[in-house]
Image 1 (cartoon, helix red, strand yellow):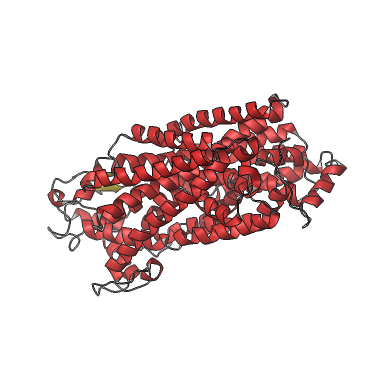
Image 2 (cartoon, rainbow, N blue to C red):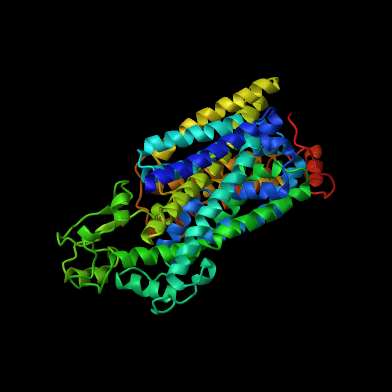
Length: 588
């Protein structure tokens, strides 16, 4: 059976599974729509949380980043996993005990202010739409390559599937759909990694193969990879390529951003007890680790296979580069998506894949007719193309396509639900129509989800960067806006509403403005995105750390010069941290 037909069958079967679960678990009340009724088992919630959080960035883009950044890509592994420790220890149990439906609702009550709640809604929408743009881009990439349809068509299909199980099922439907999606994505990620690990090293465990010797006797995998890439003028794979301050800033922004992501936090409102919230976070780490411990090996193997495919002999020799006529079918197929491009700049009919940024190497390469790098490879294709590069069976490639879609859709659904609930529960019921009936609130939530899906599709077609980069921006926005006020709301009795509002707005606008200044989204960047132009040498991916510090400073500073929180609010803060009591999610 050909790859396209097989992919349609595998992806189609997963869609039938998701839709079936959504229909079976359809939400019938606001409690089920917002927090799945508050009765999800912690193991089930941990698995759903893993799928919710391991987005297209984790499945599709993270190993691609590691493939090309090498050691520098470790910031994503450290930041995203470390954030769950913060979430489990500092936020999840206390928010669960407080027992509200949404993060903005907690902020509005804690800071005794509808204005604070509305600002939190604005922050949440900024974060969620930035994040969901990366997920929809992932959906478009998978559809355009494996199902051979236009990206717009792929986005429309993805939007339709999310519409069915997010709008009908709400959090209840999303939770059990995400369990199925986790099984699909972890299977799809692990099987090809095992195949390729055994193929390259004879060791089927990717985590062990990462440090093993190659089967062809050419030495350790990482030593061989270092040699291959440095021969082509690239930095050594195991060498650092970021400044220390930028590594710290990105890692920290990703950590606190993880702890401040509203679609992840809301998952801990779905369990029965406070201790279940901690247990859920622990199980989520276990399920996440199954993918994250494999990702470094996947990135290294993908880079090695890609480079040795293109560079078939000694650098500079007439037959050292792959002939354009002999390039494998997988390259031709990916060229059709526009995510891999070959331009024969010197007209020699061979693919010269060298580093444009290495001036010393460029001078050397000019002696054998090089006129610039001729191969452009998008980070986001590496995991998806890896099985094809390695020549694995079609069923494995089809499974990877299904896994990539599962990862993107699972996170997109969670994000769209928090957007929906913030509009229907926080904006509509909390401010505009406080007497709205539960039935009408549920309908408003579904309408808001449908509109959000349409906007998400547009952002997926016009994303501001590659998947993991877009997601890193979302984490930076969460780190600089929501995380500080949630943390201060739990652990500080002195921060008041004026401080919280000023802090959120300062962190959000500073971070978003910095990203716009260097990256642009709907506008042309106003400055080159290079280290010499960055503030303190911190990239846009890491600027959320600075935004977070500004948020804390402004919040505490403004609170010092304005009235202290009311007595009952200070008692509430103390009560949140008391170990007794589980709290029950309820509507207000």
